[in-house]
Image (cartoon, rainbow, N blue to C red; front, side, top):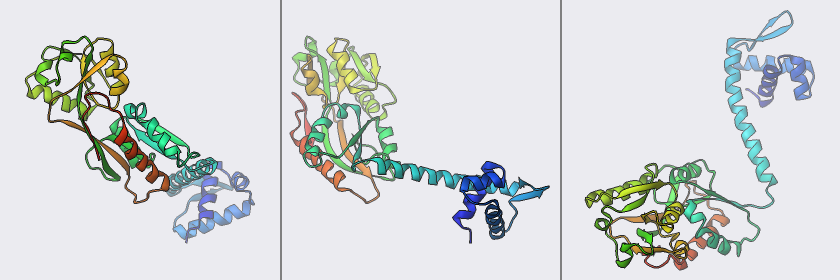
Length: 307
C-alpha cells in the first residue's frame, strides 16, 4: 500500500534532482530516501527512475506519476494555507458578498444590528456583480450573499428577501417630475442613463419594457453601477430607470423619483452555499438582514414588499 512518506520522498527527489538533496529536504539520510523510493516502485509495479552510473534519471512513467503527485500536493498546500489563515484569524468571521449599491446603502445598517450580538466578529465585504456573487458562493468564498434573484444553480440556496417596483429618476426641474407615475411611453425621445449589456438581467428587462411600448429613448450614457446612474441624473444628464436601495440617498441630492409603471419588478434574495451547514454567525446575519429590511427607508415613491 502506498504511503504518504513514500510520495513525499519521491516528490523531493524529483524536485532536488539527487537523493542527497532529497534527504536534506526531508531531514533524513540518503539510504532512507533510496529505501522509500524502492518500496514505492514495488507498490506501484513500475520503475520511477533508471540508475545510470550512480545517477537517477526519471523514466517516462516517473514523470507522468510526478505530475499526478504534484497536483495532489498542490491541493495539500492550499489546505495548509487555508488552515494557517483560519489559525491566524483571532475570531470567527463572515464573508458577505453583495451588490455595490447594497454595500453602500443598507449593509452598514445590517452590520450595526449584527454587531450588537457579535461585536468581535470580523466581516469581509465583497461587493460585486450578480455572476461574480454566484461564483463566490459556489466556490465557498462567501458565507452569505445579498443579490438580485438569479436562476436556480447547483451549489447555492436562495431565500426571497424583497420585491420592488422599478423607479424612474429625474432632475427636479424635469417635465416628468410633474407626473405621479411614469410609464414607458412617457420616455419617448428622452435622454436616458442605461445599463451596460453585461448587466444581463437588468439590461434585458429595461430594454424589453421599452421595446414592448414601442419607445425609442436616447441612451446618452450606459454604466454598470446604480450609484453612477443616480449621479448622472443628479447632474442633469438625463433620466434613468433605477433600483430602490439608493433612492433615499440621492433624493437628498436633488433627484426626484416616481414609480415606473410596468409589470416588471426587481426581486432580491439572501443566498448561501448549499452545503446544509449554517453557522450561528450566518443565522444571526440573516436575522439582521430581515429586521433591517422591514424598517429601511427606501425613499418617497418606492414600492417595496419585504418577506
